[in-house]
Image (cartoon, rainbow, N blue to C red; front, side, top):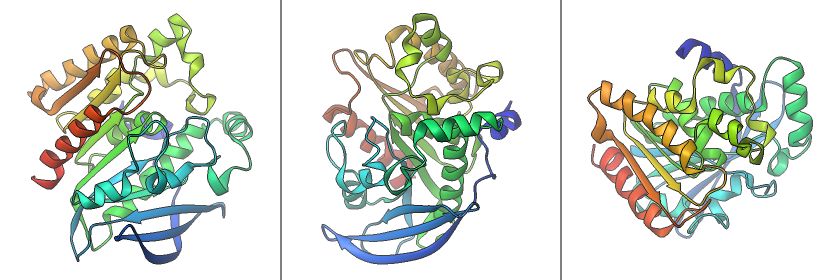
Length: 295
């Protein structure tokens, strides 16, 4: 299963080369504005933030959300977005964590070709836009882990919405990631299809044949026994409770089989929707404290 998932997720097929780096500060936090280039020559913006000092620091590969806001992209790490309590780049740094975010295709300066055109072109070629995104995130993780100021044994992944799904998919096939935290995009896809809720998700996420290989609950289960934090709002139409429950039954079974039930943390709020809440933020940071800062 892992080999097939790695193929579908296009791991090692989308290398990134660093072209330039400008160093400044944002809110007294060291900030690097990065410029990468893909093998096809496309420019990819990135941002790296860290605590003051020399390190090596624990770090988070932070994957940005979608939300139909193609203008935000990687600036989420700096400016946040409406579905977040507040911007996380400076909060991570003040919490003792470095963080890296890269711009994904169809967002920010990569807005052309748009998501529809990119998805159709990829599908015609037997690939997927989600696969390209995952392949680039894998390359970003490799770049982050190679930095001298980063502790490569203490790198986690975080994402909200699109960043959540791509986050646990990536960690399932990348054993070097120490832990994963994801909010507002965890559900069984087959159940979503049965109810029609799958059509609320963007076409970019479609990976042909994925459900013939593994369900989302099984993919998240491949993270075990590493720590995993799942944040869900039961009023979120993208992750209805039935679809969440079915996925959780599989993920919990995987952690149980590994004797690691205590490493799976599920935070559910009956009255919240597709947003990070203050309670989610508090629990997520406490989770990272335990598994990156105190490990």
